[in-house]
Length: 406
Image (tube, rainbow, N blue to C red; front, side, top):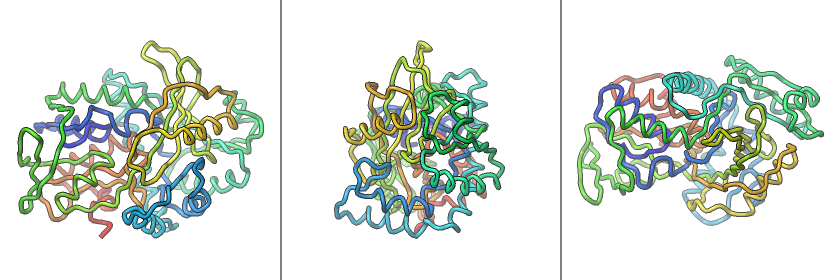
């Protein structure tokens, strides 16, 4: 297996539990990519894919604003423009109707599996406190209620709140709110603690986790061979779950995936109590997550923005400042200071992950492209990978196959 983020480590644990001998190869260390500092949400309520008509409209407005929630630096790169063209093609109501039921099912299953993992005594901050989406713009709020109805059709519980009710529920909210929606079945966790717990659990189950290992892939007929600086092997089954780097690795064996990086940021402020449940500051696309430090002290994580097509993970001060400003507009909370982090999310143009076997290769399974839902989809993805490894063909995979882009 290649990749030791949340998705890769969940896959490793699930396959090891099934009795397979598992080796995880990671070029840096477990959780070094997009898993470490993200918002940590597990959210059936966020099952409308990134590719939807509203995102297309907003994206055109945000495109060139470096402080907007979505930023695409203008440069002539064929892969990025091809991705944007496909994103436009998938941003339709028909695609949303296909995708929402699948994403709701997968995220609900993930929440169940996280609950089971926590019940086994692993500590990773798992809570089912729900989440609240908040709005300053009345028009944005009314438009969001259309999405809420779509989610309700799939059984997602949602409670609409006017401004006074929302502020009574969450005293940190400032005056001037247009409204809010509370989703009671959502959960959240500490991503860094999760990755550490999964890595430990994988080893306890008999898996090997090798950090600092660079990997190259080579196609030998219908089989994939793994090469590292010190050895070469052709595994019976190879799972590539290396986040955004999966697409680069797989090019070497002729598998072309339209996966591009979307750099996300977070600021983690210690010693400051967060909200009673995770909040989405919707117009700004900033997630606010209450967490606990190792000693139990309060901390709050402010996560957001999508910087599309950017391969470096260095934070840009202008993007960080945009998150701080957004928090100040919504909340009575001091967003200054704290630990700044940035990571590259692997995004597909249809907003769905890539899970399955490429047709041309017999020993390869792919699990990548989870975008902003890597934590939320990791356990359910691992379950699908285990089913595929057993030779099954789960229905959910039909919309997720690697070959769906042509």
